[in-house]
Length: 87
Image (cartoon, rainbow, N blue to C red; front, side, top):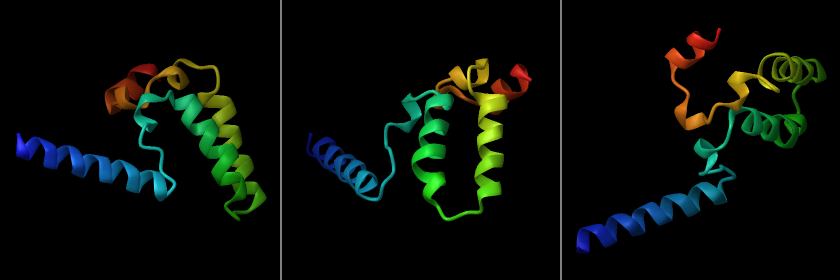
């Protein structure tokens, strides 16, 4: 029982640390489309990269992820085989 409590405390600390560092610990439960949209418009847009880089990423999102079968997959469920089956 003491080991279980210790492990739960460690996981709680890891979760809080990931939130503090700006990571989304619940990312695995999101769809690829939602996660990429959030990354693209909330993070990458303000990253300081060239405009052409952002435009390229945005076109990849728009052409291959947005409103597609691939985009609807939950990140946790994506495996290499899944991606090749869709293509």
